[in-house]
View (cartoon, helix red, strand yellow):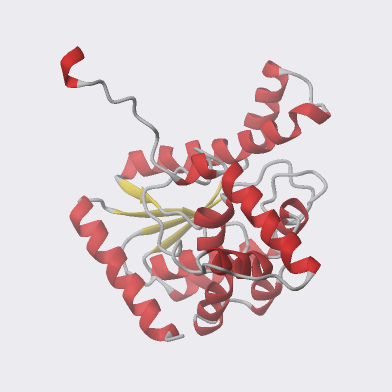
Length: 258
């Protein structure tokens, strides 16, 4: 993998896109995870004004990795500014208005958190004529659809969505992203029990990457039960979340009816 050339290519792509869009800069949400850390670093390297925004919601502990990464970027790039907005009051107010938390509402409320963050990002983006940058990788965005529709999926552009998790890790190493961030267990931070992405998906990103590649090969054979289980898991998630990965369906009215 030509890591340095890929980094250079993405930065060039970002610069070209922002020029065409006639926007003033970028804004990106950071979480302390590897995807948002790599993406925010790439955006910062464009030298365009960049806001990195941390948006905790009901977090019981300090997100040291997010703070560490923010310092890494603001120390290294003069075009980067760091904002932190705690959305806990906004979220609890929503919960109070809608309903009390219960087991059935857990997923819906997890998605609400992602959508509140999207609203916050677009507030600042609209105020400054900035672009909201997505942080999803290829497996999440176009493999299993592991994102919230109109939440973390609500963005203007996707710099790393054609890179698998493994490839993102190579970029993280090249960009000197903090070692702790490179090794941290992936999690979306939307659940009180701090469950990891792998616990939610039922498979690791490496396993899902493998399954994603296998689906592109015709006549594939499976010799191990575990391999078949992972492939089946991938296919189920891919089909279930297909609506997130395609354009919104439009009912085309025949011309003879108009």
